[in-house]
Image (spheres, rainbow, N blue to C red):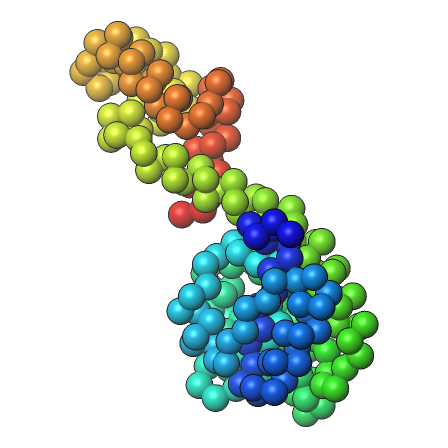
Length: 207
């Protein structure tokens, strides 16, 4: 399996040691890469947005609850699909969490086949969004390589300014504008202005 394949990475956040171990065994036997955490705080300390196909999350935990972790991920704009693992008394909370964007919930004890089917569906739905997030992060990284002057030139190119207009606005020569423009497009990996515009919009969206 490709170790960089985020479509097979599953996170488990639950404070029950025995339950985490059994869930890890189930998921690894199904071919997933699994990372387990005993608390929401530990998960947040290591998690990077845009990584992982699914988050299996206990509703009630000491410290930050599963519901509070979901709210924090929403605040960060992290769209990883969340499947809540609930006890019977937590079903109303889980239903409310689904209304706030969680993918689904399962009650403990649950059928392994049901959980695996939910994970497969969540991962499949998230794949396009995961690719988009990866593209946004890549565009942002490329934007950050631009010098201030290159950024000024590209910003003006993207709104339709001609080289002569840009030169007048920035108080530099047309040849200097052309040089900055060429260097900037090379750094952005763009062969056309349309590609530059898409990359810059994508990069700005991830900030």
